[in-house]
Image (tube, rainbow, N blue to C red):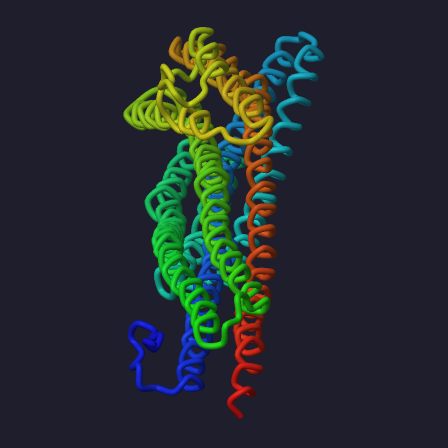
Length: 487
């Protein structure tokens, strides 16, 4: 009678040695599957940490630094504009008094102008403190060396000079030196736009680049690991089936319950790892592509909108005339175009945005359109539409004030300033609050998804060795009585 043999194993080996070889193959393959699982799960968790703890907070800090810097500059311009408004109202009151007329009509205007000036001064101080606080946060989360450290140091140094120049401009305004105040403020805003805002963007770029690299590498790694897990898992299942066949041929055991259970566990183990690798990749996609990309878009949009608001104030400081005003007008229109090519959000654009499902391009471009195209979560589209509508209100107010300023008379310039500090300011606050709501919605999802993904991977890191040990132990339990027969 021919002796049963196992492919790849010499026929001259005695049965105990052959059984031990089968057992060693099962244990080795279970160990390899364990290593693939632990390695991939650990890398996935490291990616979550890099994106959620290292890169994302630094990116948000960089964008918020840009937002606060832009708002700081807008507040500085508003304080100068408000101071000019106060001076003008007081001058009119004085003229009315000289003519023997009552100046009671100017009391409300004077009070309003003073309140607006005080509010702008408070916003300036708040934004200066906010920039400082976010710089501290960014410095404490430096992960990638000089690519983060250099921009932070540049902003810290430049911020001190900027505040000093604004202080000088405000002092000259108080002394009635409007021309000197504008010159000092031009130096300040040039410093902010040429050095501080680009430094904050460099901080953003450094972390965003690292996030994109880690995310892409993680996607490729988990996809490759799925195939490796299928390969090792398949080999483990084959080894267990061959061990079962060997015990049947050599020991006439039709089935071995431990080996049968080990085979089922191997099949489940393989499927479990593949499912976890796929889930990790899917969770990262939701967190990074759906939630964080919207966060990044929205913080960028808010920073640009604040810079446009500052351009509006600076334009009015220049009284809507001259080369400086023309440059500011062009920059304002350029910034607005980067937000939306249809800033007034006409009914046709609004209807298309409300009905959009991602399958058709919107009839306008810009960051607002990018956010509407990336809408994913419940309530996000409605909130994003509110944001775009509110910005349209700000833009319409701006159009009105520019039309008044273009007439050039003292009365028209005063009316333009009142629109900017009143109706326009209120409309902008509505926009910023709406944009923040959309941002917070995505931040909540981002934090939730990362937390759930991390907990899932932690659980998998515990199940992974448990299943591998169980398979190896069951194989040993199956082999032990057979080896005893020969002992």
